[in-house]
Image 1 (cartoon, rainbow, N blue to C red):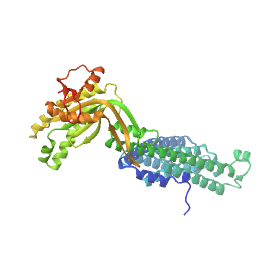
Image 2 (cartoon, rainbow, N blue to C red; image 1 turned 30 degrees about the horizontal axis):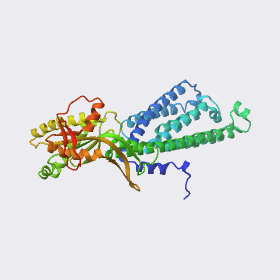
Image 3 (cartoon, rainbow, N blue to C red; image 1 turned 135 degrees about the horizontal axis):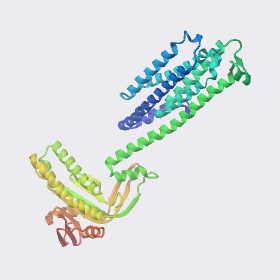
Image 4 (cartoon, helix red, strand yellow; image 1 turned 90 degrees about the horizontal axis):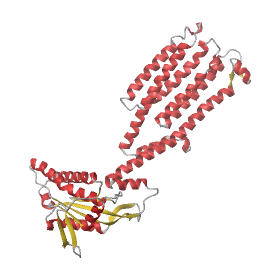
Length: 449
């Protein structure tokens, strides 16, 4: 079987691209197609109204007696078909066979009306070939472009060209005498057929069809590619912070291992205290439900203060302020966020107590410093990672909250940066020269709650 060149084969590549999209992306494409069909239906309704007005305004002759009921009946059927099509477009996804029938109906009705002109004006059959109404064929072809699917434009254009060819053949066979001429003046001033002129019309119909088809193929490729990238961004945002996902999908080139940025930011570490014995008392479903609820509530508070949840590991949450997205007041935001977490936990525990569930205790710690955010890995497997002393220190400080008997703790670097950024609060108390496990020097700390 001969393989068609790419510009003449819009079907298989499009099907492959559609099949490669996730179900929700395909559903979005179908919704857009449904809205296009609704618009097409309204335009068709306007077209049939125009046809009815033109027919009513045209003169009739005695020759129209046997034909008088045909055109009005065709217009009435077309109007009914259009109304049904419009109503269905708001209720269901119109099947391909129905859209094909719609194209056939459009072209058949227009060509029938054009064919009737020689009867309306009491002229030989070649008379209708000069009717300017044939330009409406281009309206029907262009109308299919609203769906952004080249198949329907191609189908309608081919039907229009073939239909016009049938009218030309009928005019030659039904014309009195010798209806074919090569004289352009005679063609314009008499009821004769100029084959070259009719051939030009058919070529023009086909060329407009091909141009629109190619343009729609290119546009649809871009549409499906955009849908695929949007879907990829959605999937990435489920595994990466939204800001990181946006940077990946918006990158000018492919993100490679080693790509990195360094920025001063604040890191927040939070952890459920006594989680291991608590988890041993819960069923698997209850444990997962607890973690989902905890992580959802934590993410809500963090994101409300402009932070980004970078890692979630069981009962632990690692968030950054100013790493994924630049923040000039990262430390001030982080302190406000850390101070809001105990209030959120208290409200949650009140709900849990009402259900007879044990309370949750959470430790939160902040550390500020330079952080490297970059892609690591090899081959096709990459991961975004956070590297810096502040990451490790915040984790150690979170464990040290137990030693200090507090829920929220930060280092003095965070407190200093926050005050420089406009924070006007005061810590509950200071912990000078504190010895933190895993840190080889004394640290000045501040208890925030």
